[in-house]
Image (cartoon, rainbow, N blue to C red):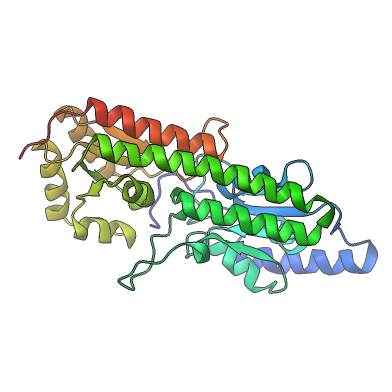
Length: 310
């Protein structure tokens, strides 16, 4: 997914890492180290993972998220020198993994001693041996596992507050479970419901709710590879919408292309609801609030959806 409407450009990664190494070397020679085990520092690749880290850390650790803008693209972002330095100095780095935020992997490759939580590595893998969908922040089970792992790492570095970290992670997990149950309730209320998606961002939520994704496989494959879907694939997608063979269109509003605009226009003309999803936090929401709102939008829009043609 390399073709985005909104892309932030920064220093090339190689320059960023080189500058960071220089800065860190100078710091080591001329000033005290910034790490403080009594007050850990967590650096997250995006505000999604930063929000989970904050929920666990409370006031006992400093959390810094690198990508915080709703218009930022985690796929194509390039780390700055200050990003690389922050990650190298952190007590713990939390990132998505699975090539989603590859720039974070690249920085960490130069700093193998940094303790990390790789969310993708904590995600259950498909039984067919295929790679898991990279958008693991929509998998509430993964979010719980990340929270628990953050708590364990912080408890090791700051044992005085270990019980608080673990209690916070448990509270986060209970709330995540409640949201997952609300997603399953959507599927129970709308058995057999199906949608199409401009990108497989909400893959895990659809799976939890039991909502079928009827996006043509060749359309989805082209999007995943960053290519324009073939005209025949776009036509097949539009036919599903205009013939009312799906209940809704799931639209990643952080990606805008002529094809996504065409799909959105077709949905609105046909009276098919458009459900928006995001890859970063919106409107000042924390992670749990964001997931609650997304589930609520799915429930509301599917309640309004017209009958699906046979």
